[in-house]
Image (tube, rainbow, N blue to C red):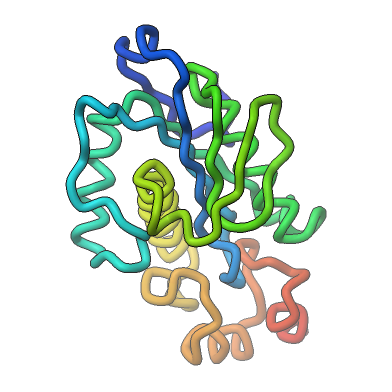
Length: 205
């Protein structure tokens, strides 16, 4: 059975005929107080472009959902991976984010020749990688990765809400909103919360 940390990895047979593949990588969920951090890696098909790719934060939820399905159907390869709440608490959020990115790249069924990562920090990889600040708005493959990571993590938060409805994870997606902070103060943290994050630590009774 595949590891739970490698949640999706798919590719078209066309991958095997395209040299010099470039993967875009981005993450979702560094700032929230709860839930895993998610990273995605995407290799787009230059012969089958996807219209409307952009930084996931600049798209409506409905548009992200539509592009999520389109990317999965039309990209040459993609993978989505996580670093768990426990790993975030053990490693710190930056190192956990880089770990999730590394897992996403390594889960691609065809290794890329170059990996372009949103931001200014790179995971440790066995292939050439470059960090691109605001890459999610500049590089289509990174935009696609940002959409996959964001939609996947939002769905995880919806599942967390079903387990712990008192926190409202379906509304704030784990971020420290007034609603979330009030619930933390009233009920203390759940097993979904990142205990090393200061607002969560302060809520422990």
